[in-house]
Length: 471
Ligand code: NAD
Image (cartoon, rainbow, N blue to C red; front, side, top):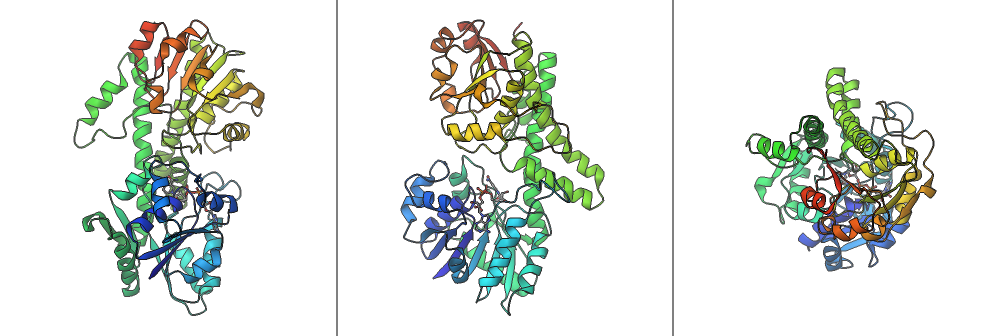
């Protein structure tokens, strides 16, 4: 029986390995992590991450051919294929701080693999890493290998949180990069035969290592750029009376452009887009390409601008101050169908409003009070681009309450900010909400989820991103 081990039981390692175990009953899959609490959660009824469909997949295969363990070394030693799906955050200090990827976790995983291995292995980069990382990993492994042969493959993950299981069941493509040597090609075939259990052959793309590594950074940069492009247009829409949804519809009808990923919003978030673009910027700078670096940096600057523009709109609409006013925040996760708050725009928006001394009542169906309080008390790292939103001192967390539903959050509120596109926000009883709010009652829709006209008929003053403003 082929044995797979995945180092890192996070948002990527957990779901990808659960799906491999489901689709490949002839393969034994172990997901290992140094975090005891995470592994305990994977082995319990309450999984450590919320992802539609994930519970079902895990329950079907756990303890059959899917195992979660903290015994990292044992499972690595026994595996034929070792995926490494550890976190690769942005470096916060030293050379490249604020841009370069921090490969500390990767390096320590590679050293451990070299240390414990007693048989040849395929080592798969599942984490998003800078182009040329495989070269560094090869050095670490071969210099410590004790005669063992390691083949490094790049197999970046393209799943999106919130639709991870769907994306893994039916991926647009699976990308496998490897060395062009016979051993490299043999390793590619071995990994290909895993995915071939359920992914059609034409969707499995093989390339050289550097193309695969760079493709992941490029794909995330393109996606984020699309959001910043439509958000930049949304600002112009508000200034001119155009409607960004009409513009996006017209633009997206062009088959060269396509309709997806053209929703204007309060900004993108998540652990990947900003981190991967910063990483791309750093790689460009290191390769003597400052103009290309500046081009990609602009995608992040527009994203920051969009968040600060939103905060400014809220404050200016509410008679230039939100001091002492209660603002209901509906949605804190960076997108719907996830509880993940990493780099969520809600953090910057909330901090901006707290900076103007608002009182916040926050509701998100999947984010805990602890998580919200933790996120809001963290000081934002000072990237090398301007921060518009950071209050001078850390926010007074006492100004923040967490509500159990949208009705509790909006009671006696002066305004509502919708920051995540949860479906339930579309079908709230807005008449009931209006009746219990201070007047005039404002709605600032950062995701264009509500029917603004209906809300106006109730009596709300509505601001929707990229749409004509109320007089
Ligand atoms: P995560 O933080 O949720 O999970 C990483 C896990 O690795 C953690 O549980 C951590 O404890 C564990 N870990 C770190 N060092 C370890 C070690 N030496 N041994 C064992 N375990 C160790 O991160 P994630 O969101 O799953 O992302 C992982 C990688 O995948 C990142 O490079 C990310 O950029 C990339 N990625 C993420 C997504 C996403 O949507 N989250 C999508 C595609 C790619």
